[in-house]
Image (cartoon, rainbow, N blue to C red; front, side, top):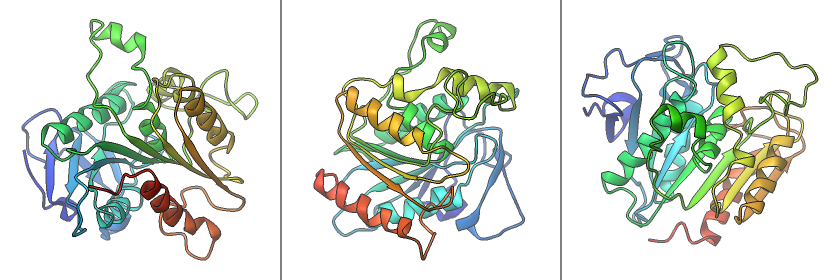
Length: 289
């Protein structure tokens, strides 16, 4: 079902059904600016597509996973703004509105939605030259999870049928809680479980730094060294994991930056990360058609 009027998208699709977009998810109505849109609940996951805005389209696609702690989704700052940046570089960009891990869905719902989104992008012909992923905050955890083995316990629940996944060429990960929310791997002593229960189960089951498939794709990683929400050790864990899995890493840690710096934190050195990432993409040949 296509309802591309939402978020001024060029395309949009329901991930799992043919029902209308009305009632699929709920937006916080306190701000009417799409660039600051926040999804507060998701009944049915959706994918929003934005065509390349460059005259030299590279025929590559990027799936964008925004953050929000798996209890809401910063679809504006960490989704639509990111899509606008990447389409200017020649990519087709796709913003995912995934279900949250809670009693209404399941702990694996975000990962299953993201994997389905990758399949849709590939099947519709937007990734002729390759496919990448970009994730920020909890969306970075989800993006990194797409590079990992599908958890065995979830495969067993699905009759040992692992969902197929297109091969990812590269990944861009920012300020994500890669594994420090998992029981036994926390940085904060005696850290309490994160509610709801399904969210904590998601973090316990998906620890991408030690579950990456080989070879891992080239990965760009950006964090704040003094992030009060997500310890910077997550960056080092992910970088080490990618390297051990045969991938290359470009890692940038900015000494002083807020959590959730995204693309619109002016006046601080961290705002330079976007240009650094563009040069990394160019060096890797990902901007070429």
